Amino acid sequence: MKKYFFVLFTAMLLVLSACGGSTESKDSASKESNNSDESNESTESNGNEDVYFKDNEAKIEDLKINITETKVIPAGEPGNEYGEKPVFAIWYETTNFTDKEIDPSTAWISVFTAIQDNDPNAVNELNVGDLPDDSHLDSQMENIKKDGTVESSIAYELDDLETPVTLVANQGVAGDELGRQDYEIK
Image (cartoon, rainbow, N blue to C red):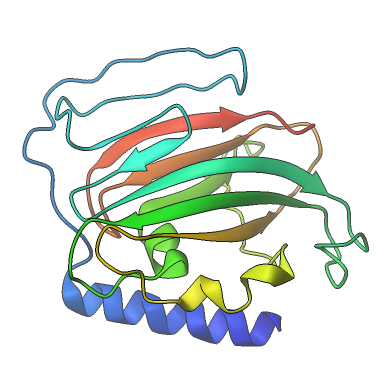
């Protein structure tokens, strides 16, 4: 299963690179920060109200991703049966605003990077784990109709159970940063 996801992930990145990723920002001059009690989030805005990442929602011109649930799943538990490390699992909904072919997995990987800042010398990007919810085996690659919304999930392998996970949202693979949110490991 991991091998299949890795091959799929690599293919998606190649397609996105060839297409130039998603949209670029119209104005990235100003940045601001907010704090939230729920997830200790730090959100930055690029000054364009049409694109953002705040309150568990990322929006770019083509799509919107709304994070509906997060949790840690220990190795060997349902949702992480085959993993050797605990994972940070995320459930989300993706809405397509265009006639473009967009699926939940490609959208997520195009927009988000997960970091666990526990290395003093390097940025520690987390590896994608197995799909945490079998009910998304088919929906993760479904083509979303214009103005349609599809649910899916993703998991990242954790390196420790203390350092928060930071989700960084960008406007596509090589796009400007929209913001970041910290999620406590519970």
